[in-house]
Image 1 (cartoon, rainbow, N blue to C red):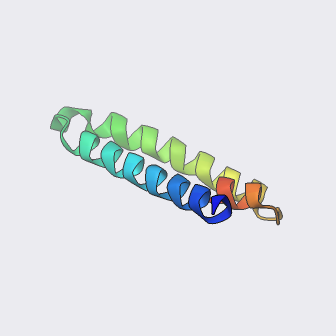
Image 2: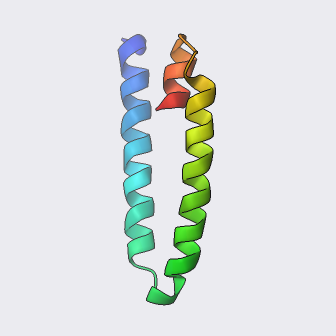
Length: 67
């Protein structure tokens, strides 16, 4: 059960955390948009670097990090 339950819990928590971040950013004043966009751009670049780093990993850890 832990082999299936833990990954599902991880995905659900990560998904809801991301949704909460988007809802929070959506509620911020319009003047914060450039800063939010800049931070999001940097985080997207870091995500792409992480994805490239884990592309060759065939372990469960690689799948967790890539997600």
